[in-house]
Amino acid sequence: MPKNILIIISLLIFVSSSFAQAPKYSNEFLSVGVGARSLAMANSSVASVNDVTAGYWNPSGLLNLEHNLNMGLMHAEYFAGIAKLDYGAVAIKNSDSSAIGFTLIRFGVDDIPNTLDLVDNNGNINYDKISSFSIADYAFMFSYARKSTIPGLRYGANAKIIRRVAGKFASAWGFGIDASAQYDKGKWTFGAMARDITTTFNAWKFNTSTFEEAFIKTGNEIPKNGLEITMPKLMLGAAYRFHIYKKFDGLAEFNSDLTFDGKRDVLIKSDPISIDPHIGFEFSYNKLVYLRMGVGNIQKVPNIDGKEETTFQPNIGIGIRYKRFGLDYALTDIGDQSIALYSNVFSVYYSLDKK
Image 1 (cartoon, rainbow, N blue to C red):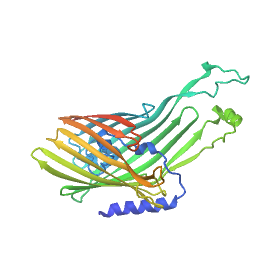
Image 2 (cartoon, rainbow, N blue to C red; image 1 turned 180 degrees about the vertical axis):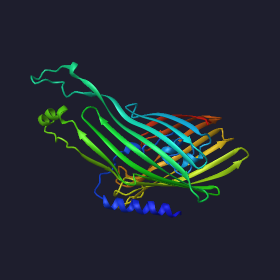
Image 3 (tube, rainbow, N blue to C red; image 1 turned 45 degrees about the vertical axis):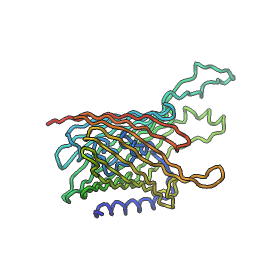
Image 4 (cartoon, one colour; image 1 turned 120 degrees about the vertical axis):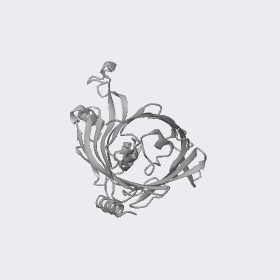
């Protein structure tokens, strides 16, 4: 393992022990994933990602872009369309040794009824007083990738700005840094993505004047301005490419997500490190048509008899690459098989060669 990867891992462990009391699941909208290819493979793409979505999964992969100007869009809906995830990205490959990118992500719930003023001081109901608001999370990510002097090694980083808005009631600004690397060795590619290596701080500000009176009447605690901390996460991956027959090729990738904030509801849970493994496969014909599948969100949960059973999240998808155009589709289950809440995800890509 390259020396700089060991330094990143050591830094993650040190930072996680320094903030052991930080809350879990901060900025979790950035853990959903982007790109129908990766979602179909159960988010197993840290090592093999080679399109514009690399700005999110592993900035080092931007150096694998075939064209020097690349664009991507994605739209997904969850919970019967209540929540919407939108993604857009642009990546520019300056040369064979460097690349830059910009990514925008929005995850939000819109048209939420605001009924705080529904009942007036005299107890009268006035439906005209009902308004609506949105709760949305935004991420602005600036990526940079560079080829190392070590053959086969690439490294990169993200600087990201977080904006979270809850109508006119509350808002937050945050900032964080990611670091990444990819290493090619024969038919193998190894990848590492260290998210929030310095921890990401969201500074929340509450506009209490918009709800203070209602909270006092109902006995709710009035929130105070404060910081929300996102702990580091280390994503490791290994991908293997193989030839099947004539124009048929395949790829298998195994990933593990390591979190450092105590026990999580994942397959391997301990304090302070928990590990979430997932695996994905991709089969292609003539680098034109792709079939993808993956298994993730593997958990051990108690059944009705109190005995533990293993559940998992299956995913499947297809893709087309024709010249500079790409279209991917993924069918993902946001829960285990018993819930069967499936989401249809589409993403489209287009590339240009510009001087």
